[in-house]
Structure formats: structure tokens, C-alpha cells
Length: 127
Image (cartoon, rainbow, N blue to C red):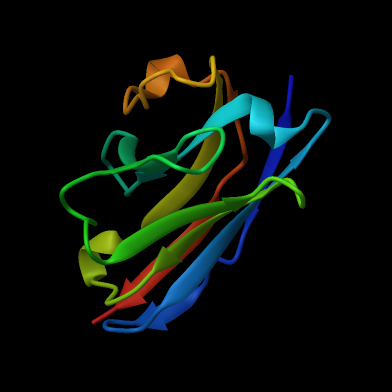
């Protein structure tokens, strides 16, 4: 199993940018599709974005498409979420998660598909 640790969350103003990082250990992240999910207070955890094992394919929720960019550096065992034009509704705890899949598997936006999770990092966007 892979261990995941998120970092980079903090308080920002609406319109600001922020980059979240997800560090993997225990196994190489190149074996996993990596997703970012978020959970706002009183709401269910929801899909944000995910990236295929090699990084050539990505998937985004409509709410963040065009504003967020997911990327990965398998050599560093890292995955990133660049968040631009942040809005108050982006306020949430952000989690990265790993889905061990074959190289050509479709990217899943189902949180039940992801086996390993980090502890989360909090993003607060003030309007």
C-alpha cells in the first residue's frame, strides 16, 4: 500500500492561486492513478481531478475545469494540483488518493475506486 501526504493548503483570497502537493512513499506512484478529492463542511467528499499513471490523461470535475490543473512527477513520487482563480466555494479539505490500475485503465471519479488516501490539507478561500 502507498502512503500519501498532502501539503500546501492555507488561507487565500478569492482570485488567488495555490498549489497543493501530494507526496507518495512506500511504493512508486507510477503504479497508481492519482485523484484529488475535496470535502467542504457538511458536504460529502467529491471528485476534483485525477491523472493517469503516466500523466498523459487527466479528468476534471466541471466545477474546476479551466481553473485547476493536475500534474505529476513520477521521478519525485509527487502529484500536484495547481488551483487558479480560486473561489469561496473551493473552500474544503483536499485529499489525494491512489487507485492501483493497469496502464490503460479509464480514470475513475468514484471515490470508492481509490484504495489509499492522505490525511488532507485545508484550503480556505476568503471572499
